[in-house]
View 1 (cartoon, one colour):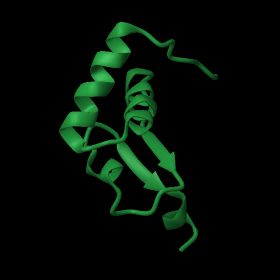
View 2 (spheres, one colour):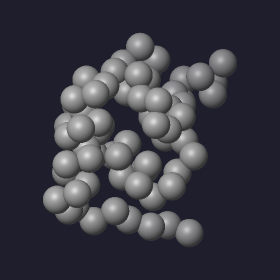
View 3 (cartoon, one colour):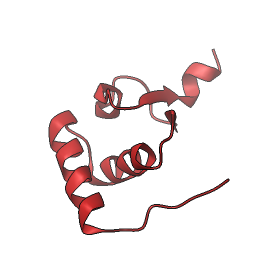
View 4 (cartoon, helix red, strand yellow):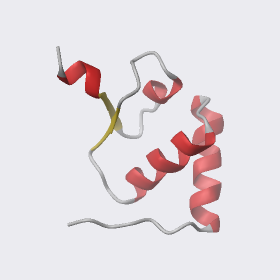
Length: 69
């Protein structure tokens, strides 16, 4: 079932902390933080490995590119 994570002060604060910890861009931090807060097991992205989001340890980050090889 689909769920959403409404924009809130706590989401902003947690996203900012995640961004600072891993050097993430703001939108990447918000999306990843939302996935973590919703209890997702993994976050799938079209980014290539080597980007800052692959430093995140709080959730498994999977590149679509890795699924094609």
